[in-house]
Length: 323
Image (cartoon, rainbow, N blue to C red; front, side):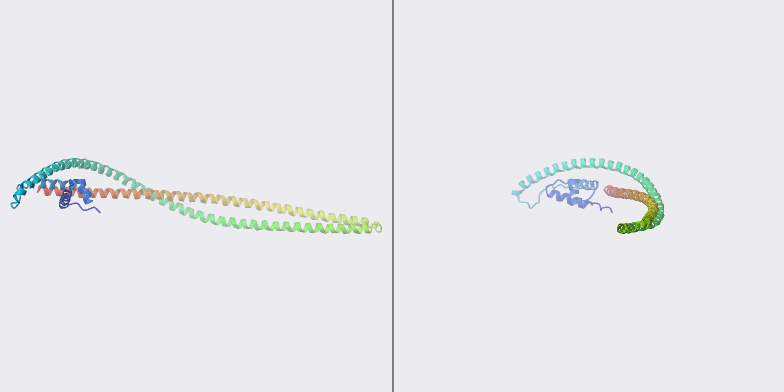
């Protein structure tokens, strides 16, 4: 919303107020006192007031003035008039200087407006291109999000499958380890049992050696039989161990493959997420540029409106002066 213009009466009142304070009224002083108004408008009103002020002269003192004070007041009045004329000359010089500066500023402003209009055109083209790019990116982002959503669903399903397979592999591995421990325990028990039997047989053999020499063949046979049974049990255990080892290797290989597939899927998911973050950053940058462009456009429109108001006020003042 544009600010209201400063009228002539306000400038006149402010100039008189500054004079009463012993301050020369200038465009800058009046603008500082008012806190508003353009330099051009204030300069025009101040010039009109100075011209009107210069025409007002007093040719005589009041008739009822005491005679003994007339000479004194004439000297004071003459001094005041000379001081006022000097100030008026300085005001005129200041006004001319400020007017020249205002004209230069006006030319600079017109050039700046021209440059800003050209820049506005360029920014409008850039904005249209950015909007088109944003729409294109929105479409790409929607496609990527849809693709990523589907890919995430597939990855989640695969991940659940791999986790189920991994769980089964661990369970089977634990089962095999439990079986291996069980077989080791049985072997240990069997070995202890055979050891006890061997010790028992040795004691019996030592005790009855003299009396049962004929049972030596039977004893040896029993020992051989026990050894053969132990050998068979050990061979059976070795086969079981070998089978379990092969199954464990196979399960570990499956586990490694499953972990590698999970890792690859995690890498794909991370890449897609990074792409989404990148697209979101690009969209945020485009939105920031769009906001900046809109701010520049609004500022240019505001300056253009202010300039139109200033020109309208100036033209109105010129018509009033002419009339």
